[in-house]
Image (cartoon, rainbow, N blue to C red; front, side, top):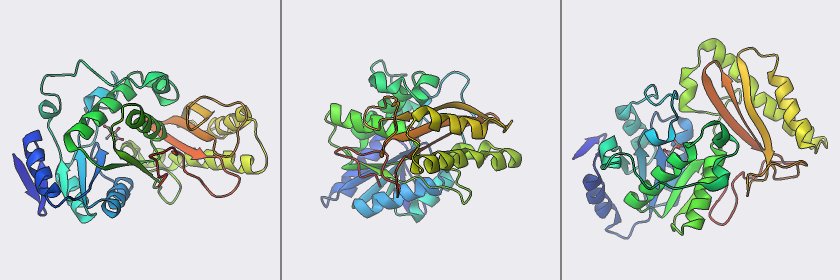
Length: 304
Ligand code: PAF
């Protein structure tokens, strides 16, 4: 089955995807993949644009992946609007949207074999969302298998996800170049996320305090603070008086290993998650003495 909106083909099945990909690849074109769960916002669209700059043809996948949601999380509530996503993807340079139904993605039901992120999947967000990164890596590996992209573009807001996908590519020799694009923020600093739409107007105002806490930590680092515990306490202290905000974790980590560090140095990543009401926010910054540096490095990461 192939549906088309705005002259952009939308493959709903793996068969339709294979047909569209054959046409796209006919001329030896390179292929970029932007994996998403839809509800596209300007952050996603910056990834589509980046892919369109780097590859001859860009595929945007739209699939809300049940495997990466825990019990009691927002799988059912997650915003879905495929027609709007297709319009936006088309307007930002995509050539194809792959929007499979669940039975297309997982024809035999939930896969028995999954991709194990190892210990790096059990820290930071993974500590609070058991099984989350297993679900992410499994679906991303499947998308890589179905689309066979030359490169994939992801957003740095999902720092741990980027690091784990990069490791998966490297450790399993998947042959995909990972490009990590900068976080896109609202003017008040809040990182764009499809989940920001859950925030009430009052919560949305409070949510801006979250990126402010990161900026305070960065300023402290620039003024010479190197004690990781002190930087984390600063984030905690800034959020503690805000009743709508509840810090879930904040940690200074080595970006290559995600191991916590006692002493921050240039390149250390400060990552945190907080609830604003019932909405979970995540963010991260690289601690740098001067200008911001890429959070995701390594052989396949461009850092955007
Ligand atoms: O970042 C996301 O939207 C998802 O985790 C991803 C990479 C599309 C996998 O479902």
